[in-house]
Image (cartoon, rainbow, N blue to C red; front, top):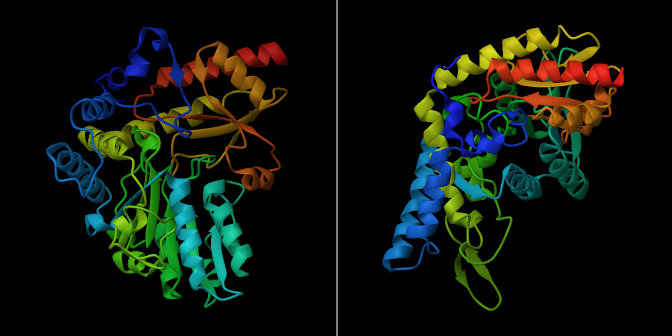
Length: 404
């Protein structure tokens, strides 16, 4: 485990009223690092203005801060250039942009390949596009162990496959997807690969060049940054070929009464006033992760994952979903408890100052696959400790005594 007290660097967790809080809802959203809050506060207090086009000092300073954030994020995921980074509202917005735009190019009967572990954000947009353009959806199955079955990937990817859209990490099972064989199979048939990395980005380093994915999306709020901003990475050639998703100021080259032409990327996909301060915060979040170091992140979370798997599986009547070992698995634990509804369990845990999530976690088809309506989910990150997991176990046992 990390020896320095990372938790103290997160003001909400270090506040007097939350000193005893075990925050285990990080798969939904993470707490904000001090550097993120300070950078955004300083920006609003000292250098806020709308960006681009303004020639006065504040506008130029704000533009520089926004564009420097783009450079930081390009470096964070090793994009080829900063123009390949589009700032959006969130991962969901990014995926809607890609699905809406790219599917215009396909013919009826063409296929979109997804997986059975997808969050609704990487399912519903493709469903709607498939319905509109008469496309067919296919799915890579998930095994009872919670891992994707890639044994038939060469057959699932065929000459009708135009898009393969896959989550890099399941927000329910904790499974970290083996992306390389999926991307390789997709590219062999000329399909475009879209990676939903919302869950993966705060848990594992992402290198889009190495992956050779065509698009990749994630959100700031899941990596210690602010809500209201996400990232869409796309290869330049593909972004240039796509039609914009939203229209208005900022994304145009020339406008007449009857027609318009579009700006170059990335502005082409950033209509209206963008999330300027949020971009500043996102860049600081990325810098925080890099300052801790991926080796520290990976070792700390591997230890939490192993410990959580060991301690939770000791509880009689608890059924844990996802891989039974820590290999290619993040610190996300979705489970049911005999005799206790997931919502009731979450309420009891809250009474003991333990924050978890209950429900279908925006993955209803995956829950139905395992014949479930809901689960309770505890999810860890860099500021969590083994003590948090011990308190979770103790709280679960209290709920058992109360309900069973």
